[in-house]
Amino acid sequence: MSTESRVPDPRPLADRLRPQTLDEVVGQAQVLGPGKPLRRALEAGQIHSLVLWGPPGTGKTTIAQLIARRVDAHFIGVSAVLSGVKEIRAAIDEARTHGAQGRRTVVFVDEVHRFNKAQQDAFLPHIENGTITFVGATTENPAFELNNALLSRLRVYVLRALTPEALVELLTRAAQSLHAETPFDISDEALSALAAAADGDARRALNLLELAVGHSDGVPIDRAFIEDFVGGAGIRRFDKGGDVFYDQISALHKAVRGSHPDGALYWYARLLDGGCDPLYVARRVVRMATEDIGIADPRALQIALAAWDTFERLGAPEGELAIAQAVVYCAVAAKSNAVYAGLSAARADIELHGSLPVPDHLRNAPTALARALGHGRGYRYDHAHANAHAQGQTYLPPVLAERQYYQPVERGLEQKIAEKLRYLRGEAAKPAASDGE
Image 1 (cartoon, rainbow, N blue to C red):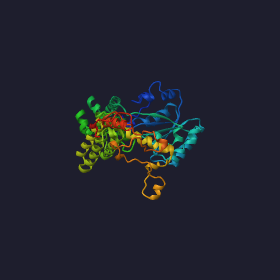
Image 2 (cartoon, rainbow, N blue to C red; image 1 turned 90 degrees about the vertical axis):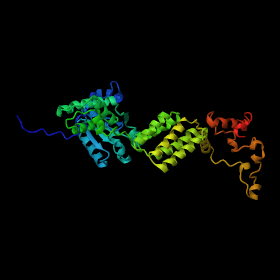
Image 3 (spheres, rainbow, N blue to C red; image 1 turned 60 degrees about the vertical axis):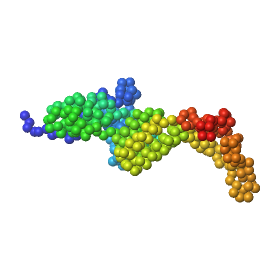
Image 4 (cartoon, rainbow, N blue to C red; image 1 turned 90 degrees about the horizontal axis):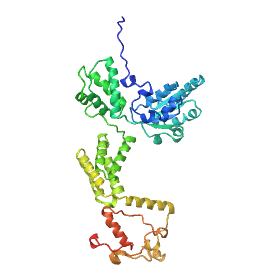
């Protein structure tokens, strides 16, 4: 019997347990499930150039390798972080060599969004003539990060963060593999806690499991052990300036617009939890107050500005609460985008009609020459008329005289404003005195 000791595999658990077949991939049924286009193509021995777009730890590298293995293609991995045109050329030369031997080549480009336009363009002729099958991986939106010429030659597949159930399945499988190497005891609750801490990232889940087992020193691993080990709840996904960041900001804005204070508070808390600058949220709340509430409730803008000022004066956590107050107020306030829509409509008319001249009666007449030219002629001073309104006087260029950019909604303060405007336009009876006349 050999007395040589077994050398431990130095690779991380996530790499050692990388799936070897499509059926071993956990999650991503929307891409690899039975009957899905990519699965059907691979089962038929066909491959095409594509890009895998999804959060970290969702299997992009694994799927790329399985694509090559499934059709017995040569696999070349390129990191856009470490490589340049020189490495791209070397990969193409290697692909040509294998092509001459009748074998296809898959060139996998990790973090493809890191390549500049020239580097991305370097792949185009080789994708076009079939020298390589291009597989890119990115955590960023390909529509923004890949140039149109490259993107037009690729099919985009969207990968999703793994569900807690999928992560528990993966961790259970990994625990069984680790147990064969080093016996240990881990509870189902501990596996669930690890899945929660991993936050949809399979690589993080496996790394946490491996570290937890390594630090357990034979002690049974339960939920309390895991929560203490990972420091509570783990780290949530948040990529400042990236897609996840803007998705969460979008969700906050839409929850406020939809008058859903619970959703608004949740997404605000998610942003804070991920490390977002509260002042950025404060600025966005000011935008919400003007874009989605407007004059339906002018207090929303005052409260949003006050929250901004409060945070600058007090900082966290007191200032964060002031912003939360503004978020909730904006969510429950009466909504109107009438000012926003009106400004957009006015800008559209300016784009369409160009620099229309100011009508003579609205022009300034500070000099005798201006008055001789007719500036100000025919203007009626509104305060000299009943209700401080010169009925029928126009304030737009003639071609736009009938335009009504501001059309208040029948909600909040704008309900009263709409009533007054109907009266001023001669469309309804005079508003009651309680309206401030």
